[in-house]
Amino acid sequence: EVQLVESGGGLVKPGASLRLSCAGSGYTFSAHSLNWVRQAPGKGLEWVSSITSNSAYVYYADSVKARFTISRDNAKSSLYLQMDSLTVEDTAVYYCARGVGGNHQKLHSFDNWGQGTLVTVSS
Amino acid sequence: QSVLTQPPSASGTPGQRVSISCSGGGSNIGSNSVNWYQHFPGVAPKLLMYTDDKRPSGVPDRFSGSKSGTSASLAISGLRSEDEADYYCAAWDDSLNGWVFGGGTKLTVL
Image (spheres, one colour):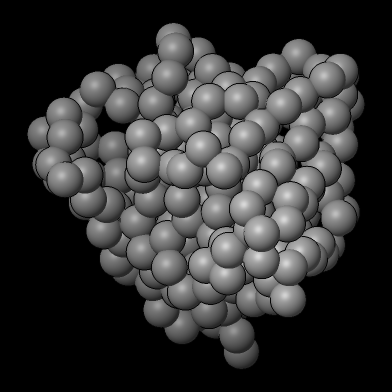
């Protein structure tokens, strides 16, 4: 069974940094792209970032570009999201999701999701 | 404001057929396939439809997807109370070089 388990969320002040992790199991971790998607309170799903299976390509939403960094360690079956210069608008539940499909991200869908980790940015 | 436009709400009675629309543009739906996700509050979202009209294993055939031009649609026939959830469309956007989601549609089964 595919499992994705996020961790690292918490309460931080504006301007602070936080690093989220997502541990994958039950499948060949290195064979799939991975993604971060967030949901702010009372809002819809918002894509944050994606990384290809071998880390060759990374993609970011404009709202987080230059502040967030996605990375992965296939040897540890782990995905990361380094979040810097956090603002109150980054308050959300952050989900990691596995990508499946063709060679390019645009052909993918997110077939397995974690339960999410809550990030709260507040003074 | 989401790049993909969905109605904020939809409703139907048990057994009815309901449809949820998703409108985009040439750089997203017009050029790439659409995926749909079902989300119950507090749990992980679930892939409901991929590549416009394909159902993952385990998704009932009451759910169907379609796409025409820059719009897509999710239809649910034989509506059940357990279908009450939030539904999101998503597509890759070539101009933004990233994924875009619709704002979500809250489906209520009356």
